[in-house]
Image 1: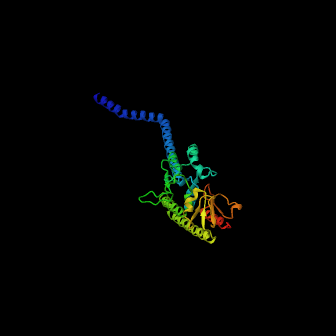
Image 2 (image 1 turned 180 degrees about the vertical axis):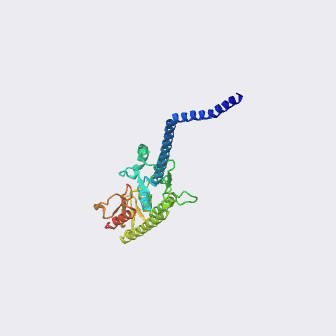
Image 3 (image 1 turned 60 degrees about the vertical axis):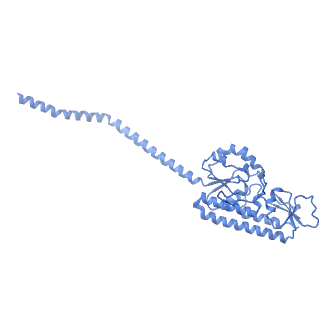
Length: 315
């Protein structure tokens, strides 16, 4: 009897694990659809997050590629920058209204730029001359759009003993300092040096463009002096104070700043700034395009056009 009881007890112990396993398996079968659904949901969520992360990385890469852009606010900055950045893919934008003369750009920066800021791209760099014309500084405003924007001051080299353009000692207002050929070459060099640092992947192209620009400016300056001497002028005259930087750079002396002055016995070439040369002034007046407004022509064509205007002066 004791042996039978012991056998029965062992049988129950043997069957008990089987019953637990069976019960566990039944529970698994009962919850299996829910478990599969949970795995499916988690897998889908993980895949969606991966896709979103990939899309974000792609957008970041695209934005990085599109940040090769430059803002300008002076016609001369736009002209030189287009010449230096040709064939690089860097987008050069002129921000003010193209109909504004240089004298109105300060107003546009103060009143209009803040209103238009949200519609502008996040520029990588901006070319300005805040060192000689503080009213023309746009870097502080563009920095609100992109904290990483780089200001490029092309009137002075930002480094120890850096070169700077030549201007009158007490000059406060914005004059046409870029019409001085030496200044134009200096600004070209400053811009090229900074652009090559901002976009080192385009350094070789920028340096090539710089050399072409400097060659064009040098040829223009030589041809300008040669033409003035060939035409037999005794000197130059102008009532426009903004042209003084250019007048002081010429090989001929400045004879008068007012048409009321007595110039008896002198052949004086009067120089004024204007978009077009008027026929009735062709006898003794050179109306040059001083980049007072946006210029769609390139650097070489702008220089060539001013030489042709001078050659048309009959004397």
